[in-house]
Length: 364
Ligand SMILES: NC(=O)c1ccc[n+]([C@@H]2O[C@H](COP(=O)([O-])OP(=O)(O)OC[C@H]3O[C@@H](n4cnc5c(N)ncnc54)[C@H](O)[C@@H]3O)[C@@H](O)[C@H]2O)c1
Image 1 (cartoon, rainbow, N blue to C red):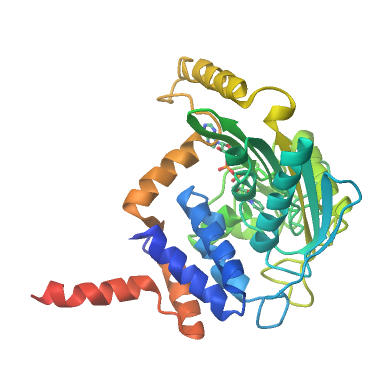
Image 2 (spheres, helix red, strand yellow):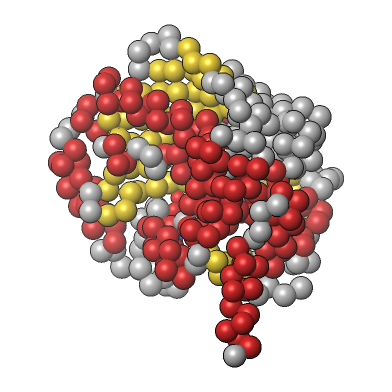
């Protein structure tokens, strides 16, 4: 199979994604929230959680497993916190709303928190944590996923790849952003290796018999492993507690798989925390200290095989600049899937339009 990629301008791709979700029946501003979040993931280089997710997301509207026009119900037991029932909304829609609510509370009280229950897969956790730095806040986001990961010591799955993200204002630098799955690798990488008949590195997964495997197909039939053994396993459970147990949503293996389970809604939960820097020190003083911390990190001598030392989020910020200029690379598999979804919903995929526009010029 060809691995050749097609580069598409971010704005064309975003327009396509927004139209697709508009046709799925979402109010325009919700369609925009989803479309923008997916393309932002691609811009940051998180292609496993970008527009490649559109077919999976759209596939849940047919059987009415996602509510295109949700009404959020909010309960505030303390002025700084809110618990949101998402009414089975698309994940990115309620996640953006919940973080906004946490940030508004952090502006008044120095700290703001939100939990969300009855939601769906929200994509890359950093997208919502990144709402915080422009508001002078640190953002923390967690969300459990459907089960695929065996806790340390077990061969049976219980947790998902449960991601968490922390975004911190970094003065004149792009925000410091930790955004990570608690598995060794995202499951999307194993799916890709299986499709390409390529092996996966040792330590990523166990097969169905509980044996370590480098065969991607066997890994898909088995379980993912947490990173760093018991520590990653504990962090996966922490995400499950905050975004599942505390949020009042499904936990400990009860979230339904978005791609394979069409019996009922996913019941994903999320957790959001916004910490106002001004609660502890003047934001400009914090900015100076972050710049100093990053300068000290970046002045270190690179190890063998490295050109420079990067801080978390730096690579993604650079990729965003490059991709804004050069477009977002899409594999033939993703292009084919998006063209298919576009045909089903009557939204022409812009690559085809762009190619058609170029045709007459090419013949001249
Ligand atoms: N919604 C869900 O259910 C779900 C589940 C799993 C993963 N995800 C998302 O998948 C994405 C991928 O997760 P991942 O664990 O594969 O991330 P990753 O391994 O690509 O990156 C993890 C962290 O390491 C940092 N990093 C990477 N390379 C670096 C370098 N050379 N120097 C310094 N720092 C570096 C990154 O900035 C990031 O903060 C995340 O956005 C995550 O939120 C979502």
